[in-house]
Image: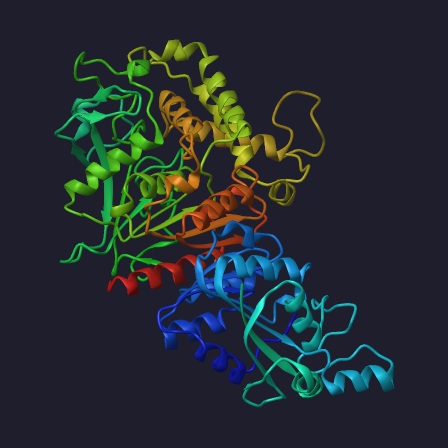
Length: 206
Length: 381
């Protein structure tokens, strides 16, 4: 199970959204982000969540959430059904991140993706010196039990966007327990953030 | 009260409010019915804005006695654990309505009712009815109660089909819809089980082509077999194993006879026997037929059916329900997504099969309660 985003990251993500937006949170967990978006941005929120517990908890809070699988069920939604589609800490847990991303871009005007950066220096050190698959605050599970089957670095993700002609409208990154800061995802800045950032947030359009 | 005019109704005197529709009721078959009676019960108070009304819809063999002891069987209402003062569907807050479906036998017009044209019971001369006809009847009742828009329509199994029909036929009158453990169409397997039941009724000599009311005999054996077969579809293999296993009924070893050796046999026989006291065999034919005809895709797609529907939906299925399995709820969810509706869906873990929607399922209660509360709060109820 991916741990949920920090409160700072969630508040940052919520602040990116215009009042009254139609939003879909893919992998919404217990509906923390949807609740925040509803309460602070008057968003019309919908959620998709694979775990029964997550759906039950969300619906019991009055959120509109459907039990389903991000790998297959985004196909049900019509084109441009949402202003924002959120993939927060989800993309690394799906079977085909590229296809899930393509579906998210189809059904939303903008897609917000966040993921733990596997290029973070502590992760690199861990692998280099301990020779073991890294565990961290963002990635607490062991390799054999983790849901995070498609981990990537910020540089990997930027390369995927280039390859698929996905436009990066904005990129943010954060070290542990700090507020996400915007950065230019090219050249030396990208290389530096790829080393120093523990978490990243991208806003994408088709 | 209907007893004087309806000698073959199973409804005891004065046990239910009964509305007689002033206008003839047009039916999907093209025919129309005059003098339709609708037996119903209400709980709680309708508020001044008439915005707190919830229609709950009953399943195939249930009736309007959802929230009180049944006047025939003495058993508690089928959703008595869910509906009442301070309960999940709180009658201190909501005005709850439940009516016996068209074709039924608890006071609403059905095959055991007298045909006003002949003074004789309808029997098989009653036109075949549909889920659409049932819901049209309920809409007349809602008119009579002075309610334009229902806060919610909620029901399980065939009750869920009525909920789906309400949202399809009266989208402007339904604020929120909760179809539980149900489907938008009957599958060949569903139809097959119903046909077994109908054939069991018709094979009983006492059925007499449906014309048994005045003979004093009723096709009780046939109806009991129909109920036994249907009852199996309401349970899961797990629950049968857990409740009965291969246990023998009050004996140490098998009797080398065709008595009810096994507990499951004894249980099913009891279910069959007790059913015939509270249900009319012809009603069983008519209502199962209505369910078999049910298909909301209407020759196009289900998404088109809900194109204009702004209602909030909650769907729930149960993991071991093989009568209306999760895949059927998902089919509805997909269509609702395509039509842009506001929908929540959860598959509840339960080993109790289809009947789970009538039983103590705390996770289901949490979901339904949270959803209904947010619906009501949004509407200022």
